[in-house]
Length: 340
Image (cartoon, rainbow, N blue to C red; front, top):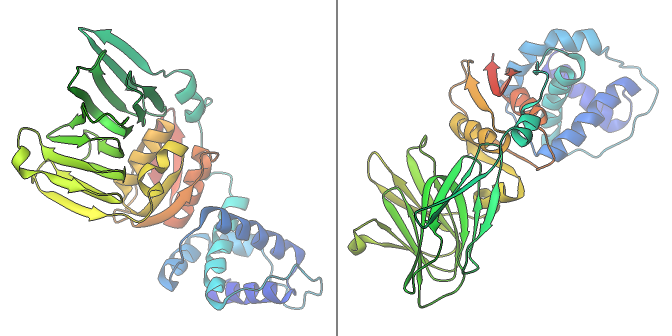
């Protein structure tokens, strides 16, 4: 069965003339497309997937040109036929292969919640809080400000703020800060070479040691971002603006974003990818599920778009990503291995 035959099958489905078995596979993947908002595939990408799973289609689906049993009819836009054709290919992989992934006896999701804990220590007048990968934490400061910490994040701050300043130190990771309004005391977050100063605002800072960039994104209010100790070269951010600082080139780039969920969706447990590279995806899975992802495939250039809810498991997320990228995966303990 080639691409054209699959498209013919989808056209028969649209007309209500395909067999019940064919309709069942197509129905399952219509639901999957709606749930994951998969991207549209061009013919080249579709043909690549067809080459890899064509034999599975031939084994499991027998074209029924003269089928008389009607299936439920859907009205499909012409371009949707192409998406659905790719969906049928992926559906065969998911429905009829049992070796797509192998998991260890205990799942990474379970390990992340049972063997890892958030740590909080007090020493020399400072409070230090650390979240392991796979766990998030929200803390409330004495002034009513809050810090929502993503996985793999470390912060420290004074037990008691002074009468003139509130200073927070983001040592590692990603956190969203919601600063309580207090005109008499500036609210400053130090992250690497950057200082972010706010008065009654909410903003997100991402500063993982494994990443070259530190990013400050403003959600509400107004902030001033400067290189620590260099107040003469400050950048003002307004809502929906972000500043990216490269630790190597020392370059500062200001840009805007349209959807705040793309920045702080992690707080609600969302995974949102918009043209994401492999490193971005690996970091997101590490933060969410506490796993390390190793790419042993020859797929180096990634441009992945898709989103997942907080209820979807690691395996469900990997199933979709690997289907679209024509990959398989194996989970061993807390490590995911991607293969061609």
